[in-house]
Length: 190
Image 1 (cartoon, rainbow, N blue to C red):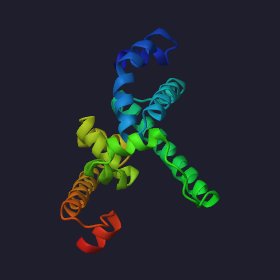
Image 2: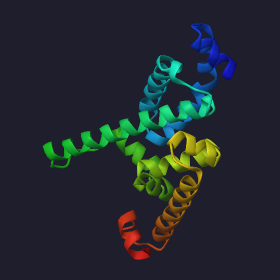
Image 3: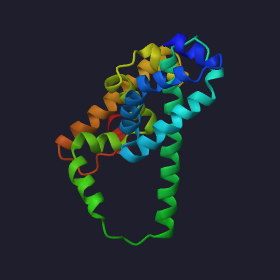
């Protein structure tokens, strides 16, 4: 892969097509798991691959190209999540009254309202990212550290804390606690 990157850095355009073919599906999986929205993930992958092409001159082989690309994807998805949160807060301020659920929203709620999906949605974006990178994308802690710009030990500790937090959330759900948010669990277990 590195030889293709060098060719693109030297001005060739065609090798980037091979890079896109190699990374398009893994990037889509990653983005769809992080964003929990297929349409947003498709758009994000295209934008990430364009950003990568535009900035490929800045890539240095201190980390793998894959790690560099995942780092771009992480920051891009984090930006989308933050925009979504701001948008939702604004909507809540502008429309405090309840509105009817669309058929698509009802289907999503029905399909994804499982304890694990609910628990994952209650994690911070950074925590969800750790799980996606390690479990679904099978990244090593060293690769995750390169993607996140942290040291390996810090990433390991944060990952372990996230696993404990997720486990506690699922346990609280099994025990029938009505309020099993991460804040209530931290008070209970902290």
